[in-house]
Amino acid sequence: MSASTDNSSRSLFVPALGSLYAALNTASETILRAVVGIFLTIHGSHKITDPFGAADMVEGLGFYPGAFWSLLLACTEFFGGIFIAIGLLTRPAAFAGTFVLLVTVWFHWVTMGQGFSGAEKSLLWAAILFFFVIRGGNRQSVDARIGRAF
Image (tube, rainbow, N blue to C red; front, side):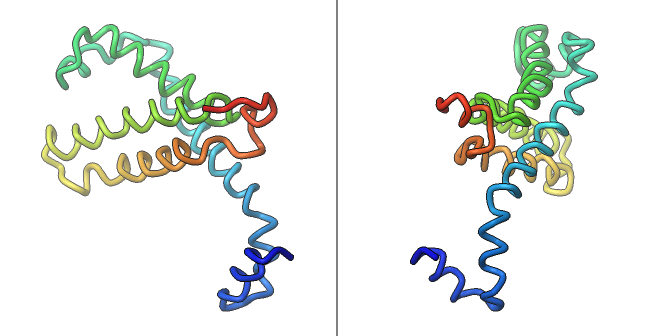
């Protein structure tokens, strides 16, 4: 056992669990990345079938031209979700998703006046995606398999 693993195991209430946590570390991160990507893809699936359908909504938020931003929103959610799930271009896809979610935070909190309760889910999603902006895809990703990552 390495010194760093040994030190973290000693600080656990149940030190015997240290090896279990270490063994599941990468797997749990991969599962989280896959679930987030799949959910984002599902969320964007109806937008990708009508990529210009949100044009009026995005213009209402101040994003002009609406057709361009609507298409970008659909692609970010659908294709970005696929990329995050498989771990390809993980950081840029997660960054784009984080941006989209921060816009939804603004929309719910400020534009709709719903405050924290309206923006809570978007804040949580943005935090999860930001985690992958920083961490990348991990060793169980397409990025790792091709040996290139942002």
